[in-house]
Image (cartoon, rainbow, N blue to C red):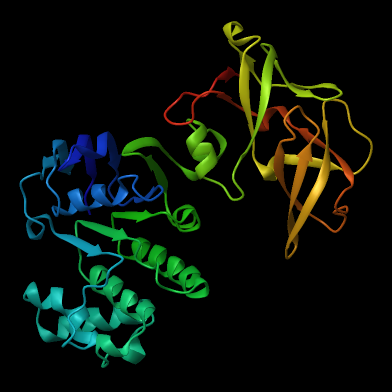
Length: 371
């Protein structure tokens, strides 16, 4: 295992395209770090720089404190599995998995032991004699993953390694990947745009956008204390609701409504300089309390527009009776859901309210309150 450190790393391609901008973070020895972001956010470029497949424009990448900028991929002792399979077509599944072990000079008995172990771990035992051309895309991707994990690398790099598998298999493979990470004591960096994968697998999560690191932290930290509006919007399903509001006092925010305004208490104090400022109020769908009774004090009325059943829970779309007819999502459990067109009342606990600068989305600080 190794600790991986990014020290002010940037990557610029021809045409002055900045894929990664001054990124610094550390993936600790034995940690499972997921890098999450939309397409074009720079996450794959970061992984390729760690692997030595892309030159670093500025900054340093270190393994256990040693700069590896000038080392070749083979000198870095990495395990790689990418979205594209890159399997050897004339070799069987067994030989594809065994290839990096034979390159290390291991004897046949040791190779066989390791191949059989990893094949069983990712459910490939029944197809070891087959050639890649006889496999589905999902199975080929699984072989690529097995070939990466069969070694004892300093760092394991996984770039969308299960994207071609169907939903049921992907959920199973996530559990297998995490179990192997723990059993083999790996240091793993996992790139994905799928937040379900990232949230279920990682010890910590790094959120990227436009080549910049937006936030790094545990899932709980990013869920409960998003660094900016982009993180709040990108992490969470359904995404966080955003409602226009105004800071009334250091301890209150209001939502302007057609019939007066709903004033909401805050869990802490906002700086006096923000009083009177327009802000964006953020509330996660899971943290909204919905009532079918008369409007409660400190709540805002709305009209139930849509009910989407999801087994034991449901996602409700509610159109607020604010000045902008804002639509919000409410995630609830239980049988009494109401009917489309019915008037409902929504309330927000002070500790669940996030405040953001109204004008900007990316890399802006939240408007902080002190508890």
